Image 1 (cartoon, rainbow, N blue to C red):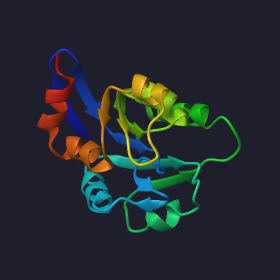
Image 2: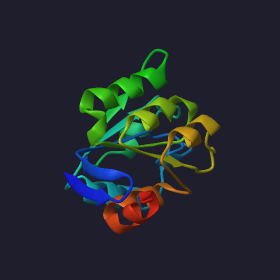
Image 3: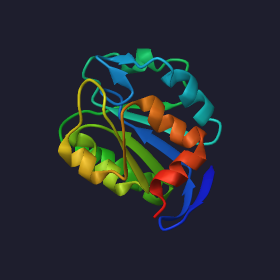
Length: 156
């Protein structure tokens, strides 16, 4: 669990990190260097869930050795599936990472939504649905590992 009182934003009690994989934690299906170590450190205080359509078919292999649950989404309406997943966990206790149009509802539902923009780019709707925009998954994960950064970004 992770607790933080952010002036103007409110009290935050996080229990879950929910993240997209393709374009958020990975480029072309390959995990960004440094993400593995940070996710394992974060797994000591948050439960990690990776939700992905797995465009490149590499998510499970790339995430081996990381203390997380991997959920490969099937069918259609991935945006709704991701949003419902966050709500079922208790959205007030979730921080979410994503970059695509199918992440927008999850980012908006979560207590804190972070849009990560890598080589794949970011959808405008994902950006508008998030609380924070960063240039890499390392930056996003460091907000949790260095909580004063998160507080400084969200305070009003």
